[in-house]
Image 1 (cartoon, helix red, strand yellow):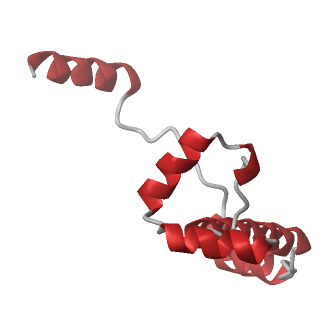
Image 2 (cartoon, helix red, strand yellow):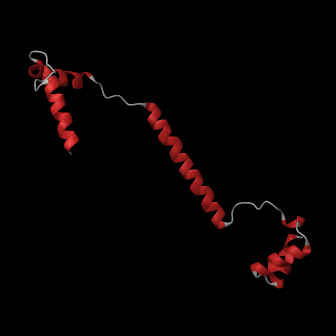
Image 3 (cartoon, helix red, strand yellow):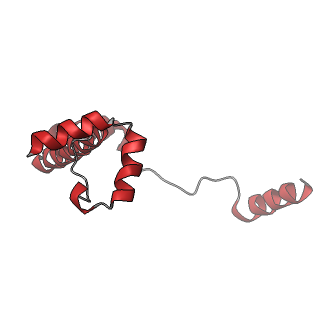
Length: 112
């Protein structure tokens, strides 16, 4: 704390208490008028690129939501067709899904 006080005293001795900054004559008298003239000169314009960005983002969100919704309902096609599955793997899937033999028989007879 003592050093800060000493530094301040040294600065005051060197520069004094006089304010080194000056404001032009009448600066603050005309300031409000100049500021208001700058505000009124600006025209409010619509920028179409902002609308385009908003539309693209909305489409991305909607598309993502639709893909998620389709996936939850099981409407998305599976990557591996049933015909390519081995019998062992098919039995595991059927056991997990709890499909009865009667359901399987009905499905196979309707497909023919």
